[in-house]
Length: 269
Image (cartoon, rainbow, N blue to C red; front, side):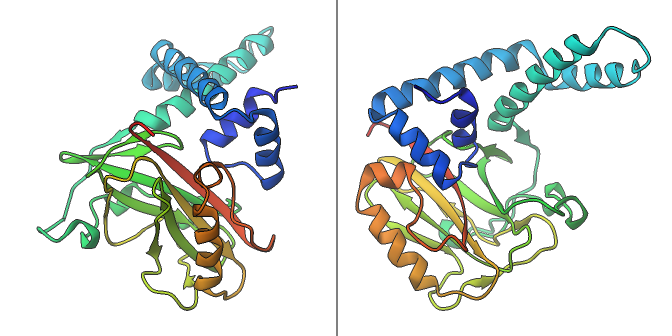
């Protein structure tokens, strides 16, 4: 029996638990079938986004909110908010932010911020949130948010943002289609970085994708107390040794850590 679309949607958003990931792996042992199901969801979201424009949705929400005394709208409201929910998922993949850049001709791996800090979430808005990652891609004089399983290309310039939630320490790294593990934060091994809990935090440098095929998957590992970066990287190297596992599974580490991931698809595998 195949799992419902909700698990596939959570996979796209990088929000699956270990148990839910195992359920998907058992349900889709064929990678090609799994990819087809994800593509169907992406096509459906694109169709919904075309039908429900973000600006139109905002107007409809305002209109519905002001009509709370009108009886007989329960079913229609439910259907509307279901549509709006899926539209929001699709919109996250194509949202373009008009932002400034400050690269100053530095090498890509050492570039400064190109996403405006004013666009990130404030500390007042993150209370109670789980740790999360967000990936921005430079597009000319602006930037766009890349959702889980969005397409990316060689030489794309990316900037990483995290929300720590209630966790105090963390590590951010990525695994690519060649099995290469790249440490993004902190930039050195040792003790995991102490996280900033004051809202959404942009790493102060950019990352340029190389020509590794297939994918680049970003991991954000968080803990409530200090932990060793090398402990996490050892598990990352083990995971990276198997391409299929690196795309879909989580690190084999203690349950005391919280794992968040975003996968970007790259060209033909």
